[in-house]
Amino acid sequence: MSRTKVAVIGSGNIGTDLMMKVLRLSETLEMAAMVGIDPDSDGLARARRLKVPTTDQGVDGLIAMDGFDEIAIVFDATSAKAHVANAAKLAPYGKKLVDLTPAAIGPYVVPPVNLDVHLDEGADNLNMVTCGGQATIPVVHAISRVTPVAYAEIVASIASKSAGPGTRANIDEFTETTSAAIKSVGGARRGKAIIVLNPAEPPLVMRDTVFALVGDADHDAIRASVAQMVETVAEYVPGYRLKQDVQFTAVAPDEPVHTLLADGAAEVTTKVSVFLEVEGAAHYLPAYAGNLDIMTSAALRTAEAIATRLGATTAGVSR
Image 1: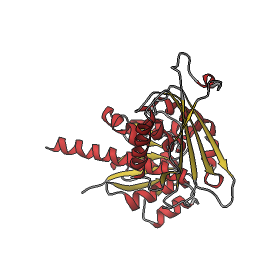
Image 2: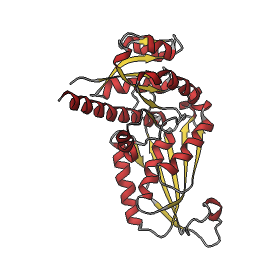
Image 3: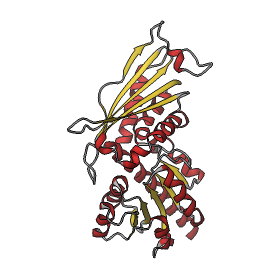
């Protein structure tokens, strides 16, 4: 079976981990190019050792490479600002873009929630939200498919060592993008995102908390929905797991939760708390960098689904 050729823009931690996942795990994708701007980066050096074609001239170098026309999918693992420029340069060439930055030019995609919808719509630029979004929005959605969520707040705690220059430069975009996706993808009426760079030594794996305000609802149904979603995410992120049972706390009459709610929101009676842990697969990065692993795993899942659709379309045309 022929594989769909892909390129990775960004030879830093995220891009290199993604390259390793394509090479080690994918039966449908083929690494056709690793793109960077630092000729001495470890990502480009590793790609060269693995016989992956490389360029240190950025997107312009990618477009000029032999075989560029055969590349169908391009991952962008740079930064929000860089992705805007990269997407503009690639626009005339008809590539499918999988954006791992918070640029959000295209629709937000969280694979177990809405990937199929955007594939059906034929979107050319799919945004992977953020690491915190990939970890927590499935859970927000799992709650909201049982009962309306008036407010959802997520806290993503990641090892400081796993946050490189790109992550740190995009902190503001992280909170804005994740907050927006909590609503548009997760289904909460209002959303808020907080990121914590944990300086602990030795570094701790990614921890995520989902806090939701709901009305009267079936607690067992919420537990079952969350458990099913965690199982689904763990299919492509093996280190994704619940840390403890879903917690339910009654909202006290004097609690000022109205300050968190949108105007006209229905009464809330219950606080739902979900505690998650994400351990990385260590394909390139340390196991504590689960925040980066869940992003690259979600991007790989998305690209493989795109490749399957492209293959089905080609087969249909040939018949």
